Structure formats: C-alpha cells, structure tokens
Image 1: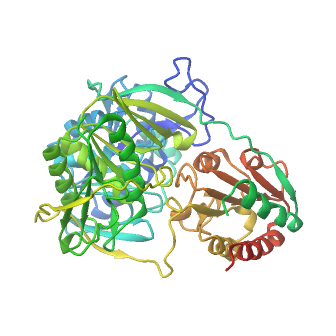
Image 2 (image 1 turned 60 degrees about the vertical axis):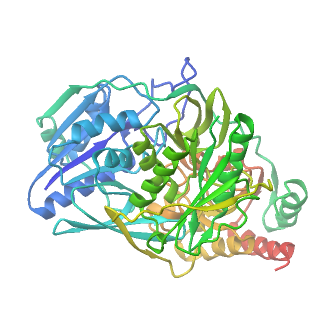
Image 3 (image 1 turned 120 degrees about the vertical axis):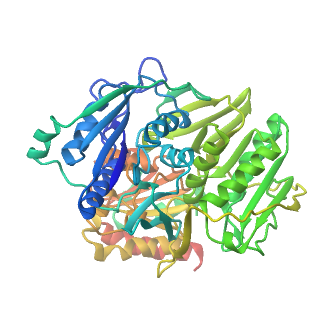
Length: 250
Length: 321
C-alpha cells in the first residue's frame, strides 16, 4: 500500500502569540514549532495501514520553508519511509494555492491513500485536504475519527453535530484525520537515529498569490474580567442576580 | 454587485438555525454592496423552506431528492457549484458547521476561488473583508478577498438572525443524479441526543476539578437546567473522562456562546483560546489565583461540589422549570 501524509510545521499549542512588527504575522523568535497535532493522527494511521497491509511505503510531504525539514524528520522518526519538501517561502492565506501545489506533487504518483490532519492549528482554515481531493478528482472524507479498510474499500466515521456520519468510499481516496482516530506513537530513539538517514527530497515550488490579502493580524480584544462575586455556595444568589439583571443572559 | 448565494443547511428536512444566521450575514453584505440574497436548500423531498424569506432571502432555490437526505459531499458540491456559476454570485456563504467545513472547500476548489472558513465578520466594500480567528482564537486575521467569486463560512452564534420580510419566492432546481464517490450511508445518533458544544448558545464545561468522570453528572445537570451543551477541557478528554466531541480549546472546538461556564478548569492558554470569544464567562474554581478568573466576567471561588447543586437548583427556579 502506498500512502502519502501531508504535514505542516506549526507553533506549539502552548505558544503565547505575539504579533510581529509588520502587523500581519506572528513574532517567530522564541516560538517552539511542532508537527501539527492533527497531522500526527494522519501519520499514525498511515503507518498502521502499511503495517496491516504487510508492506508498502509511507511518504511524508510538507509545504514550507527549509525549517519544515525538521517536521518531516519527525514523521520519518515515527516510521515514514521518505520525505518530500515542497520548498517555498510564500505563505498565501488563500488555501487553494497550497492545495494546487500539493495536488501537482501527488497527482499520478500511484498513492492508494492520501492523508491530512483535519486542520492546521495555525491558520485554522480546514480546507487544504478536501481541496486537494477535489483537484485530483478523488473521493474524500474529512475529519474522520474511525476508519476501516478492506479489499480497496473503506468505511470512515466523522463527527457531526449530535451524531456520527458513516461514509463509504473506494481507494484511491483522500482522508483528513480528527482526534480520536488513534493514539500517535512517540518516535523511539532508534527511529530518530534512522530518520537522519532516510531520503528527504527538496523540490522548489512556486505558489500563486491567491485572491486573499492580509490587512492585519491582531490579538483578540482583552477581556476586562476578574470580578469575583463571592465565595462558596453562598455566592450563588449574587451570581444569578448578576447574570439576570446585569449581563441579561438568563 | 452580483448577490450572495446562501447554502441554507437542513437536518431531517428542517432548516437549521445556522441557515438564518447565515442569511442575516448575507443580507448585510447585499444591502451594503447591492444585489440579491438567494438561498439554496438541498435535502430530501418535503423539506420546508418556510420562513427563509423573512430571514433575508429574496429567492429560495430548492434542490430536493430523497437521496440527499443525508449529506453527500460530492452531490452537494455539484449542486452548489452549478448554482454559483449560473447565478454569477460574488459570494457563496455557508455556516461553519461539520457540513459547511466539508462542503466549502469542495465548492471553492471546483470554482477555483479562495475560501475563508469560520469568519466572525464579513463586510462588503471594495472586495469582501472578513475577520477570522486563527491560532484557535489567540489572534485574529483581518483579510481582504479580492477574487470573485469567493466561498466564506460564518461561525455559529455570531450573526443574529433577523426579520427582513423579503419575498423568498420558491423555485425548484435540478438536484442531479450522480453517484457520489464517497457515500454517506448512515448517521448514527447517540443514545441521548446531545446539543453540540459549537452550536449551543449556553455551554457548561468541566475540567480536572471534577475529580473523576463519575462526577460529570453535576455538569450535565447544570447544562440541562440552562438548556445548554456540555463541554470539557483537554485534560479530561485526554484522560478519557469525556468524549472528544465535547473538547473546547486548541485541539478541540472554538466556541462563542452567549454564556460559558468554566467549572473546575484552571484556564490553560489553549483552553482560554477556544472560549474567550464567549459573550459572558462564569468561572467556578477553588483556586482564587487560577488564570480563568482573569478572563471571566463573574467568578465564584470555592468548592464546586457544594456550589453546583445550589446553582443548578437556583437556575431551575430562575427559569421556572
């Protein structure tokens, strides 16, 4: 089974965001970057599927600057066989641009499954994986938390409001992965050592500017919180009064 | 300016509240820039589009077929993209729901246009300007979309539905008959129908302070008394106490309810990011120095096991149920 996993380098979830001097991006100095958490589920699932199939190849593909090589090495340390960096300094906010570059790389490469995390925790747009499927004309299921594959047919489950959708498809296909699908493995020391020797191909790509322009990146408005209405159960009437008469939400 | 096409989401043949919210957002765009608002309802035969005119639609197109009762991404995308091309709209607007987040990228890819998901404001001027929380709400982009058309989805609970008294003239449009490449065969409903944390206007979330999964009935009872949804912190989801569907924060859901209760949640930065755009925040925690109190509008310091039963009782009395 030949599997591609598309991964992204993002700031760690515990990062305190500071706005850079240009007012349009984050200040990256001092920020710890990690493999996007949702992409860990995609990597794990690809490795499991390859193990179940008893062979094949898992290719980790990332779009970004040179530093994304480190992110690809993390996937290689988890067990992916080789990496491809689509190298570009551009970071267009129009998701169609990265989707086009990834689709061009993945097209006609004989992948049985292409996996993405359901969203990248930086841009939070939840678009690129599904767009790549459309550009390649492949079936896709987004935000899956359960997957079964047999005889080149798949059944996936995705959470919707107050329920779970069950979706059937045939391979090749594109899937985006949600938390709950699996427990991603930690790279073992041996994996980390081996990852250094695995092939990582760097290809320069040109991205279009897209149809979206960033005017500003700002911190959200500060909340003027901090009003303690009281201590213990005795404060309940004061809270009810405040919610009803001051905040008017009851 | 050519108008706005709104995908009016239905479930079980009934149009959802998010459709009214999306129409209100579309109305503001069309009233500012000119053009009509057209709603598109995709669903099973017999789906009612009643009230969409008053909610802001000048026209309502119905693409109905029993094979569209469940969400079929491929077929829905074909119908929406065909309507979008035929009508020459400036914007295709959806709700940022499980359906909208899957359908929007499909439509944008087919139209070859940009997509902005989960916006909290949309203004038409020279182009479309939207704001989008990113880094799970730790920062906010203001972006200008110059491409025509574009696909935008609006965050639930942000745009208030309105009464616009528009005609909402119904029109039947082709529902197509393609076999979807990926086919939804079933929706499994949970044993207890739960209100979704991202769509609810009131959310009660519990954290590690609950001490164990067996105590979450206290959270569920308060949520039930308020008519709200139950949420959870990452710590308790990772510990297996609660399902991931309830997780609020950076690897869970970002929510903007009218009223948010954080109970036994200290306020890790990734949790605060996911709920800070709530209109009113109430924190209950035994630690007076917990970070959650810095962003809460109202706080009670104390033992949640004493406070919650009293609070649930008082809410029931206050709401007369």
